[in-house]
Length: 484
Image (cartoon, rainbow, N blue to C red; front, top):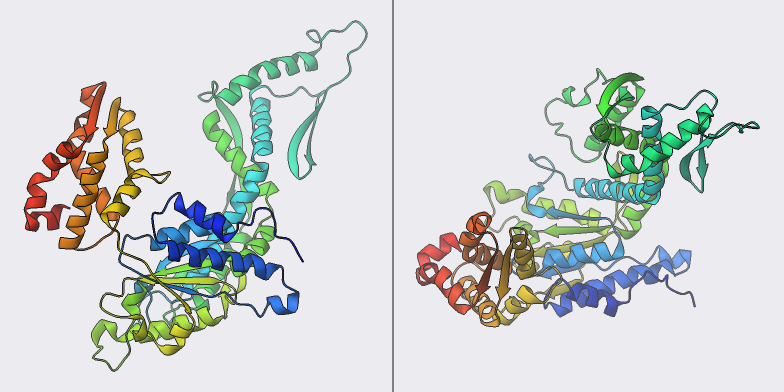
């Protein structure tokens, strides 16, 4: 039996990690944890069977603010998987004005490219920083002609090597020009690293690429050629090709060291990061590990012939356009062809007006796992305010601490906040945990405004403090609709 890599988490570990940031919704966490683990299981299958195992896509049903997006986002981060969140409402059926559905796959590839590039840069960042520091020192203290400078690569990490002439009999380091230069240089190095010379100017050769005179976007397409599909990607690729044909030119510029450091860092990164390898790895990662979260999915639910007219006429058309992507198809991007056979799709929506059965049958069949997220209660709000690593109370405490204000949260104050959030959600629009942001901003409004003038101070948030801040608004239902 093949073993799982150490970094692969078990479903129980995934749920435990999600619990650090998201309160409740146990079944939703369990479902996405299983989906993530199934990907790890699939990698251990023999090649023939591996290609036959497709991900079980998920449909999350629940009101806004209960954790649908956050669960998907956190899971993708745990799995180090390319993740993109899109709104179903911004897509339109082919032939209508709007974005085509294939753009979600191209967005996923762009995310994968960025992710892989950042990983490669991080792996050599320390070496590049050292290399740039040495180049800046050479600009401040140019090496004498007797010193040989070579750029080498060790274990894929670039570095500069300096070869100094040997001291003759009777010579000292202070008397030999090359060795004296090296001593001065080494004394300056800590200052360069610490930024003490950032305001000094040096002359740097800056590489520029001439802009292409061809603007593909300005080419008239003619009536009916609204773009979309592979056309947008093809146009991007054509524009990139024209731009790459333009010659590079160098010019000298006097820059402060802080700006020169950025210019040299970008130059070294471009020289030592292989974009072709990054593209290949990113395409593979997008295809095998990608997660696409489609929000507001209930807004495209509905079928033609059921009184649908006007701008809603393309809703079923959007579903039919999304269907082949979820089923598995090959999409053309400017980096190459991408298969969606093994991309995990998570669709989500409130489904207050429409219901999942309003989706076309073929699409319902491609979203086999359905989980209903529960509305948040007062007890959930209390836990949200105190338990997660990024709890809102902690965020506000740390923000006001920068002004010298110590905020203390009493248990009865937390309970009062939670009950107020539940009350307003039940009497107006239910926006879930987002209601807490509104209420906290309201009760701390005066403190945040006056904090710079208060100096050192302490604020105790208890039930009396909360009731006093919310008294007029909670009692006036019409006013709470606008303010809370």
